[in-house]
Length: 236
Ligand SMILES: C[S@@+](CC[C@H](N)C(=O)[O-])C[C@H]1O[C@@H](n2cnc3c(N)ncnc32)[C@H](O)[C@@H]1O
Image (cartoon, rainbow, N blue to C red; front, side):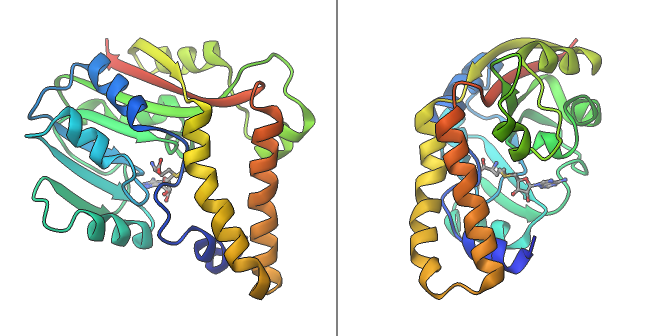
């Protein structure tokens, strides 16, 4: 994929994955996040979940980390002047903590659930928790279009995700499916951007726009077959 074209589509969007403020609030409550919690938003993208994290911990702090500098720039601009928020470009697995909560929306599959949880264990404060969302199959046999969408990535079902959590020595406190509203909050701004960019797009950009449009159409057609599951977990 042409990364320049990819970031032309994804520049300055409100979020880079599905989710809602209600998802964050639910996870923070289950994780027992306190008013002054220290939180890492791992793979934060442009910081779309930071306000919801701060709503759960108004006297706390959020460190956003993303490997893409452009997303960090957006997050930094969004929270300029709020001393509770620090936005850094870097590797979400190379943070030291201690954190009361590691929130990771739509980014843990880049590392692998078991591997990421194992790596984050030493970054958690006593009693700390990790809350992450990850692709999940809701049916036994995924439709061909869904297999194609994930390009061979073995999307687990809820039991498979639970096994990956257990393999890291973590306890699963609870799960929640990301709602359709969460997906639309991600996809509708992308659709608007596609419409804006398409008239003047060159071949590389057209390919990126088409791929994004296919992804959106696939989710809308097969949303009963797959989605994102949010898992709140704690070291055993
Ligand atoms: C699907 S996006 C989700 C972004 C954001 N959490 C949201 O929901 O809007 C995944 C993000 O993870 C970031 N990412 C992937 N691997 C990373 C790593 N090892 N360290 C930091 N960021 C990473 C990508 O750059 C991307 O912004």
